[in-house]
Image (cartoon, rainbow, N blue to C red):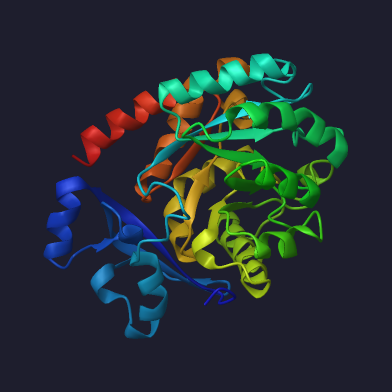
Length: 343
């Protein structure tokens, strides 16, 4: 299935009781086994795309793909409900908060504030992956991470480490980190795949073409949503071949990485297509440049309202992890969304 060019793109979404009623009437199907349903679908095979059709007219020859799109993906070792992942960068040069938490004591205090507010995951990063960011050695990356990890692991919140380097992954997991978040989808360091095959932690495979230095030149897609799904499928297949079980894998469409503004917006409109991968979704739009372009807000730290608006579409899929800087605002928005749409 993973390398198949055939994709089903769900649309015509319904929520809550409307979704349940439509499923019982046979005019809708559950989207990824969650509380949202879809009533129409587009079938994509190679470069051929059908017109949208009602779900009860999907041919029997597509039922294998349909089973994936309607099945609940694994929770990847985390709580199954939607979660907020708070971003904590201990870097001098990240695009939004670079330099704010280079002092370990300050970073630990921020992490504890996240825990108190209810963030389910803290994503700790020590290398900026913004466009043209300076490459950081594993030694420097670990120097920044180690004192913070020593204070915040084992405090009841899952700690994710955002890194491309196998040596950093190994040290972080040994120090108590629960999750690895790799923007390169385990392509940057050849030792990453075999290392994680030996471990039992969940991991996030993010879509990116090239590197932070080259990604802005790699934005040519035939169909951005279908192409990103298929390219992530290749990375999932590589992980499976290396011995990593699929129930440990989450996927991130990589908003802002090798995508222009229009492509980012299209991906957000078409997030249901990621149900084809059979993995839990992580969505990270927080304060990114496309929000500034759309709103005219040049200062990244002032883009949190746009972050909330661009994150909520991810909740059509069950268990989505929303990766944000302003975790308190996102938690509030998540609670309102669930109360209004899924109660």
